[in-house]
Image 1 (cartoon, rainbow, N blue to C red):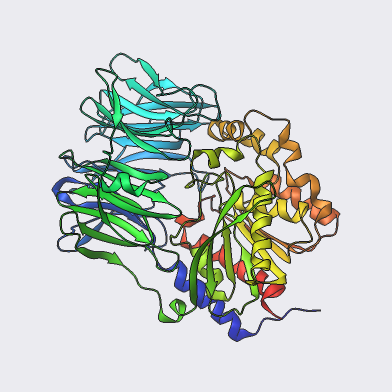
Image 2 (cartoon, rainbow, N blue to C red):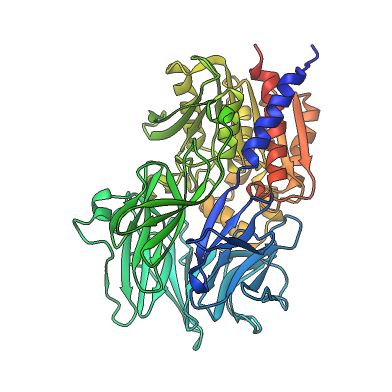
Length: 596
C-alpha cells in the first residue's frame, strides 16, 4: 500500500523541526580580559564563538565555526579554540584570536590536523592532547610560538589545565579499563608523573592553582564522585568540600565541572538523578530545577547555561551573594511547540538481573494514554539523558510521541559502579535494560502495544541495530543514526583515540567484537529500519554501515538509508545536519507508527 503524507502534516513537521533546530545551544567557556564572558552558540547554524558584556548584554562574534573546545584567561586578550579542517572527520587545528584586534593565529600550523581531546590555556601557554592516525601526544605552545610535543601517549588521555610550567590531565594510564589516573607533566624537565589516590579508582579533570590540584575521584566511594585537593609539594590530599556545607549536604553523585575564579574562589556544578546545581564556596547558588551544563565565575557573578527537557538553553547571570537571577541570552520557543510538551517524569525499572535502571520520560500532550512511544537510548555509552534540553527528544514529543529515555548501565550520572557495568560487556546486559524500559512503557499504560519505536544516535544508533536484530518482536520500527554496525571493521578504520576507546570499552576482550556486532544478525530483523549516516563520520564510519545495508538488501528487509553528505559525527554542531536527521526520522515514524 502506497504511503502518502498529507501536505498539511508535512508542513507541520517541517515547521516543528525548523522551530526546534533554530533554537540555539550554548556553552560557556570562561572569562576574557575586561570581564567578558566567552561562550559558544549555534545561532548562525554552526557553533561560533562570542564574547558578551554581562552588564550591557552587548555581544560580538570572535570566531566562526569552532569545534568543541575553546578557552580564555582573564589576563589575556587572546582566546584559543579548535576548528575542524576536514569536512567533519574531526581533524582540527588550534587557533588563537585576539578579541580586540581580530588577529588570528594558526598555533598548530606546523603539525598535521589532529583529533583534539583536551585543551588548556594559561593566558600565555596553550596545552592540548591530540591524536592523528596511530600517533597521540601532549603538546605545548605559546600563542605566537612553535608547538612542542612534550610526550607521546596511547590516545586516550585528556589535558585539562596548564600554568605553563605544568600540564595536567587524566587518562587510562595504568592499562586498567576500569580506572583512570591523573598525570602531572613538568614542561621544564619533561617528567611525566602518574598519580592516583588509590589503585583501581577513577580520578579525573585536574585543575591547577599555585601548588594545588583540584580533582574529582571515586576512590572513597564507587557510588559518589567527590572533590579533593592535592598539595603538590607535600603530597597531602584532603577533601575540597567541608562537612555540613550546602554542597556536602546535597550529596552529588558526580560533577559536571568545577574550578577557581581568577581570585581563587571555588565553584562547582554538582549533579544527581539527572539534575544539576551550581555552588560557590560550597554554598548553593541555584537553580532549583533543570540542568546547568557549563559555568564560569567572575566577581560576585556566576554565569551558567541552563535548560530542561521542556525549556531550551539560556545564558544566565546569578549573583552568588543575593542569588538574584538575570537572563543574558535566550530565545523562546513558539507557544505552539511549548503547548505540545506534557509532563516530565523520572522513574526506575528493574532489569532481568535485578539492576535498577533510571528513566526520564517526556510525555506529549498530543498523544493519548496508551499512545505511540519512542524509546530513545542515548549515545556514548558513557553519557546520560538528564533533565536538559535535547532537540531529538523535543522534536519527537512535539510530533506526538511520548519519549522514554533509559539511562542503561554504562550511563554516567549514577555513580562509577553503574558506569563501569558496561565495560567488557557493551551490547550485552545494557541492551536488556533498554528492553526493560520498553516493557515498562507498555505495562505502565503509557505505550500502546505494537506502537513502540526506537530512535538513537551513535551508541544509541548501535542500540537500535542491536534491538532490531536481537529483540525483533518488541519493536514496530527503528531509526539508527550514525550507528556502530561492525566493531571489528570500525577498529581497523579507527585512529589511535578510537582504537583505545574500543579497547577500554571491551576491557581488551577483542573476541567480543564479532559477537556484539549487529552486522552478523541482519537476517533476524522483522520490522522496518531507517539508517541515517553522516558521510564523513570518523567515529562510526560509513563503510561498515554500507556493508550492513548490503546485507539488508541480501535478506530483503524493509529499510531506508540516508547518507548526509559533507558532515561528520557531531550533528549537534550543525543545524542543517540536525534538521536532516530529524526530518528523515519524522517521516519514517509517521509512516510506521504515526498514522493509525
